[in-house]
Image (cartoon, rainbow, N blue to C red; front, side, top):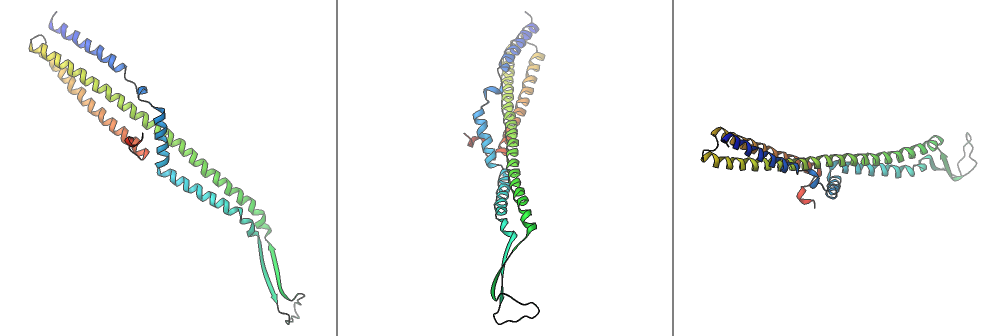
Length: 226
């Protein structure tokens, strides 16, 4: 068997081995829905926008409770004092002393049900806005979490590729030292190892980036969430 055929067989063996190893990589083995729920709960607790929405709900509820007592605004009371000894020829006074006067604002009285209704609707809108934002948080956390798992799985593939390339280089080095492999084949294996190492570094950076994006949205480090 000549040197080129040996090198070709060795390369095919490594390629088949690497393909079998890579086929086993999947994000599903790292996926934990229980842990995902913890991440979502953490984001809902820590994200600043949620606190803003909570304050808006409190303000809306306070306005609603205040409007419930606004019925009294339609009624007013006052008193008039007419001295016993006073004589008014222009406007004769029948009753002397203190007199209680009660007035009712008809327009205000009819306006109050709408004011209370609007205040109740404002509370409902504020609560629904929070519920809607919770759905947005859940979607974002899931997207960042899945991206993080994908980056980790991809890194494992790249690590395996570097290991396979290293194995190939070591084997070809022995055959090259014995004169069984040409320098060109050995050089190509070295180039492949350098390329795979560079790709692995990029995959490591992708993992750090995905982790940072997820932690930024959670407002906490992943290590602190058990």
